[in-house]
Length: 108
Length: 116
Image (cartoon, rainbow over all chains, first blue to last red; front, top):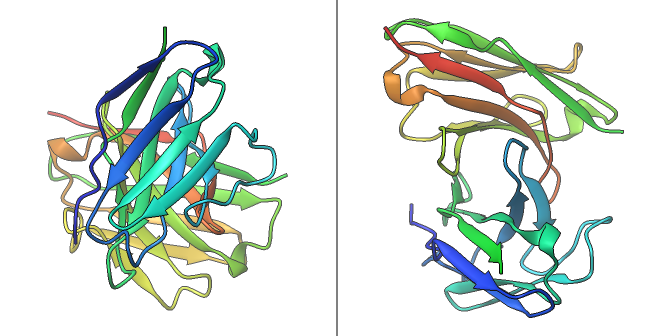
C-alpha cells in the first residue's frame, strides 16, 4: 500500500481560488476521489475518477491529476466552502481503499 | 432517495464484541459494493472493509484483519460489520457507504466507544 499526502491547511479569501494537492505513488495508475466534510456530518463526494463531478456538486469544484499528484480546485471560494477535504484512492491491486490525511480549507 | 442507516454502536470493554448494521433503501442494494469507514474523534476517515454486491469478495484494512468480519443480506438490504477483540483504538464513528464511482452515499454513522 501507499500513503496519500495532503497539506494540513489551506487558506484563501472569498472569491479566490483554492488548490488542494494530494500526492501518492499509486496515483499514476489509480483514480483519485475527493470528499468534503463539514463538522458533525458525513463526507460528501465532490469529485470521482480524477475529474468527474457528481450531479448536484457546484461547478466551482474541479479535479485534475498528473503523475503522482491529484489536485482539487475550488474556484471563487465561498464562505460555505470552509470545511475539511479528503482525497481517496486505492492501492495498486485495487484491494484497499486509502484516504489522505485531510486538508482544512479556511476562508479568510 | 438513497438512504443508509447505521445502528449497533455503543460502549464496550476492550476485548469485547459488537455487531453494526446498515440498512439501505432507495437503490438496488445487491448491485453495489458496500464499505465501512471509521473516523476517530478529531481525525480523518479511515477505510475499514468492503464487500462485493453478491458477497463473493471482501477485503479489510490491516488494522482489523482477523478481528472484523463484513457481511451482507441482500434479501434484507442490510450490511453488517461484526467486530471482535475490540481495542481502545477502534473507538470511532463507523459509517457505511455505497460504492458507485466513489463513495457517493454515506450513512450518518454510529459511535463505537471501546473503554474500560
